Length: 129
Image 1 (cartoon, rainbow, N blue to C red):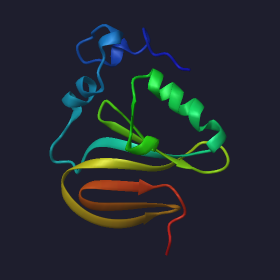
Image 2: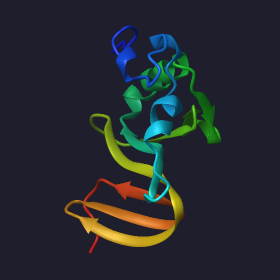
Image 3: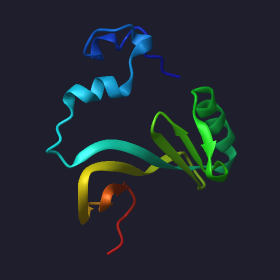
């Protein structure tokens, strides 16, 4: 487990105690409304069923709450969706909140970015033709 206490205090715009650093306090001064991307809203992970409970227990210890039948954990405005898949835990997709409505479908190598309304998803698997 990585511990940032005492090492990331320089990241906070007002130099507060590291234990008091909130993500929104760091991002707010850097936000520009003319950009399309507002925030990262969630991630989807492929998790081997044998490793799932260990991951869930760790996230619960960090303050996440179980939602939607145990397939989604939420915490601090961030949703972590878990999909049962054999093999090592891996990132499947990132979900973004946008500053305004957009419509896009862009293939980026093996990834695909899809925008609909004020949400977007970057799927990190081989894009279908």
